[in-house]
Length: 251
Image (cartoon, rainbow, N blue to C red; front, side, top):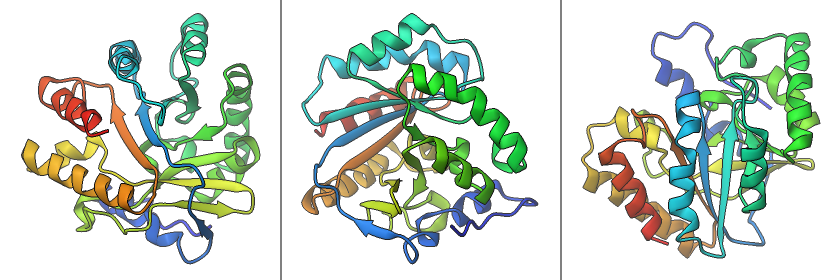
């Protein structure tokens, strides 16, 4: 896997833009899914975000459709979780996934030994809560991290098909699955809420971008993957929660 990133980067967005779908398509097997779903994913970055999860999940579960798949990505060792609460989420049909070790961003740039040590601490959590999926904090994968997570997980969800500042807002128009032997890379194929705050787009423009892309995915028989964060600067505010609700009503 070729990962393009700069350790010294004045503009953090430049680092993100370089680690996008274009670096993957020429090397790995591209395939369409046999089953089309709507994946609604949440990245929990902080304890404050974790405390907000039930409000969003209750909203979704009250409107749940058969093709909704809800996945909560947690930074496993960032803070203490309620085991009972996570087991209740599993029982309700919500999947628990890994959002790195502690969301500090250090794990990606650790050496192989340190990455292995952190993954060993994550493994007990993964076994207990049936974790098979990984998403790197800030979508940043490095070669060392990728090589290790392939051994402990079945899927990576760290690849995006577009970034706001890349000039390709609508994505690359390839929105299926990448296979690296039996390891799966799923592509985030819609605009995540963290990008709302990077633009000067008004609500109508954001919804237009989202609905246009969702229609494209639907017409071409791709699954849709949505991403929301539960911090106040992202989806936990009046404006962005309203955008969240309108996106959900699309389905």
